[in-house]
Image (tube, rainbow, N blue to C red; front, side, top):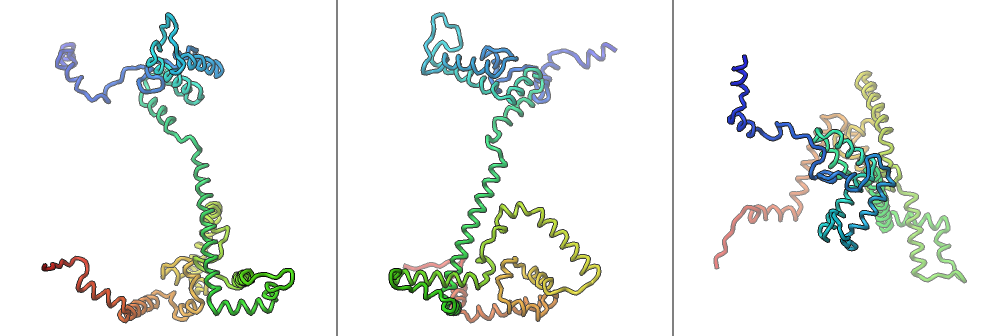
Length: 355
C-alpha cells in the first residue's frame, strides 16, 4: 500500500510545481498576527509606545505624549547615540506617524479590542480586514441624528413653501372683483374700514391707509374662504415629520377602513354612500385627494348624477372627454399652426437651400 501512496502523493518536482499554480485563495495563508496595512503594520502597537498589553488609558496617553514630543518633525533633534527609529528628519516623521497610529489604535476601547483579538487569533485573516475597514469607514456621526436633522429641515422647507403658496393664493383672490367686493362689504359692516381712516393725531398717509385696507380685505378672505388643493392653508399634521410619526396610526386606520369596506360592500353587499362613490370616482380618475378636493362642488355633483362610480358609465364619460378635447384642439389656432409646422417642417425633415 505504501508504493501506491508514494506514487499518488509523491514529493517530486512535478507535484511541487502543480501546487505553486493553485490560486492563492485556495491555499492556507501563513499564520501571522501582524499584517502590513492594518493598524501599525508589521510593528506591534504596544511595542511602538513602549507599554504592555495591560496598560491603562492614562499610561498609553503619557507614553504617546512623550514620544510625540520627541519625534515631532518640527522639534526633532537627534540625540547622541540615538538608535531609535527617527535618526533623520525623514525617519523622524515616519516614526511620528507610526506613534500616532499606535495611539489611535489603542486609545479607543473597541479598536483596541479588535487589535488584541487579531494578536490572539492571527489565522482569521479576512475577519481582521473586515473589522479594521468597517471601523475606519464607519460614519463619525450617528446616522439617526442625520436622518432626524434632514427630516426636520425638509419639514421646515415644506411649511414655509406652503405658507408662501397660501399667501399668493390669498393675494390673487383679493384682486378678483367677486371676492374683493364681498370682503369690502363685510369690512364696512364690521366697521373695520372706518378704523383705518381715523383722523386727528392718528392720521395716516394714503399709502398706509391703502396697505391697511388691503390687509383687512386679505384677513376677511382668509376667514371666509376655504381654499383646497395645492394652495390650501398649511397644516402641521401634513408635514413630513408628523407624517412619519403618525405613520403607524395611519396604517392601522387604513387596515380597519379596508376591512370595513370588504365586509360592508363585498360581503354584505351594501350600497355605496356618497363618500364611497366619490372615492371610487377619484380612484378611477387617478387623482390625489388634494386634486379632487380642489374641484368645484358642481363638478362633483355632475359626477354623482352621471353615476361615474360605475365602470361602464365612467368609460362613456372618459370617451366623451376625449372627443371634446379633440374638438377644442381642432378649433384652437395655436394647435392648427403646430400641426401645419409638423406637416411641413416638423422633426426628421431634411431641407436643402440652393445658393
